[in-house]
Amino acid sequence: LTALRTERKRTILREQLRPVTEIGPVVSEPVPAYQFFSPDQIPEELPGRGVRIYLSAEEITGNPEQISALSARGFGIAAVFPRFVSEGGEKRRFRRMVQQLRDMGIDQALCGTIGSVREAREAGFDVFGDFSLGVMNSRTVARLKEMGLSGVTVSPELSFPQIRDMTLTLP
Image 1 (tube, rainbow, N blue to C red):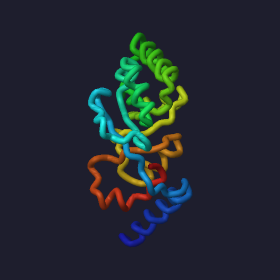
Image 2: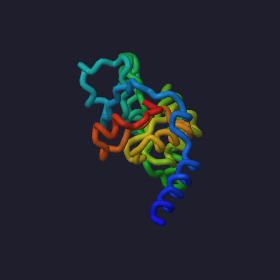
Image 3: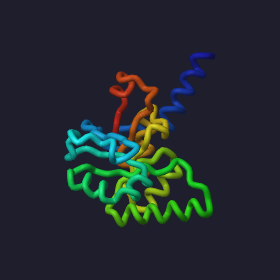
Image 4: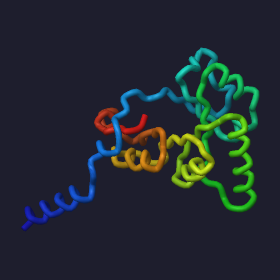
């Protein structure tokens, strides 16, 4: 009886889950990315080309000259969206800041919640998922790709062998 129950569960799971390989090709080269609290923390010796820098949206909009200089060095600049924005005045302030980012030429966002992913996608940003999205397996990566994310940060709880064994369809 136990064997029959086990087989039934396996059959149900096989029918419900489609292979991750149907989602897209495996990406093999991650993009080096660094997160800083302020532009002043970015070391001069850090090469700019091919490197993504994450800074809070407030830091980017508050330091347009430094951001322009970083862009000139070849850094890809991405705005870290807040994890929570309440309704009312805070929401209006956030939307103005998003428009400022777009006006500055910032088109990438790092999002740590599904709500901020939605806001960033609606504003036309190229979205990357932060560790707080809890990416623990290939299925989560595939689902986030379906939602339009361009890359993810896997959960820090994963070991290197677990990360290596994941089928990554996003950088």
